[in-house]
Amino acid sequence: MKNHHLQAVIDVETTGLFPGYGDRVVEVAAVLVEEGQIVSEFSSLIRVTRAIPRHVSMIHGITNDMLADQPLPEEVYPALGDFIGRALLVAHNARFDLAFLRHEFGRLGLSLNSRSACTLELARRRLPELPDHRLETIYQHLFGAVPDGTRCHRALDDARLTARVWGELRGGASIS
Image (cartoon, rainbow, N blue to C red; front, side):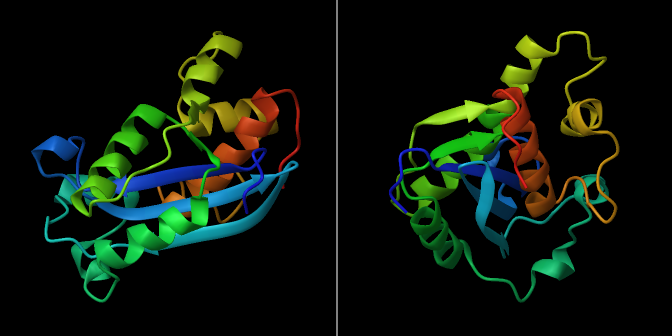
């Protein structure tokens, strides 16, 4: 998929806030969007040596036990890199997600596409009236309730929500 109009909407869940201090990605997801449609999805939990603190696990629901039989970073990131290719990377709070992904890719001697866009920054410019700019708040403002069964703060569901927000904030391009 080498189309320059392709977007890879990504999300990560982590053990904490600071990749430079040892925090790691424990779940990564990406959805490829082309011409307003999600055309493919990638999602994986990742077995890392850094334990997930209890207070962090309470946010995303991922436990250390859930990671025991999952693939290692050296299995996940090359596959993710192949999946996203040269697509424009889109994330909600891209600075956070991309800092973690660049750190993880760098640990393996891999590089990550540097072209990116941030739905958080875009929403702050386009929707300054919102009380906050959390992904759920923006989604509810634009579309109503978050779809039933959506697990906010899980990477694949957040990537799907971000893809819809991205399409709408860019001018009403419906993403399904």
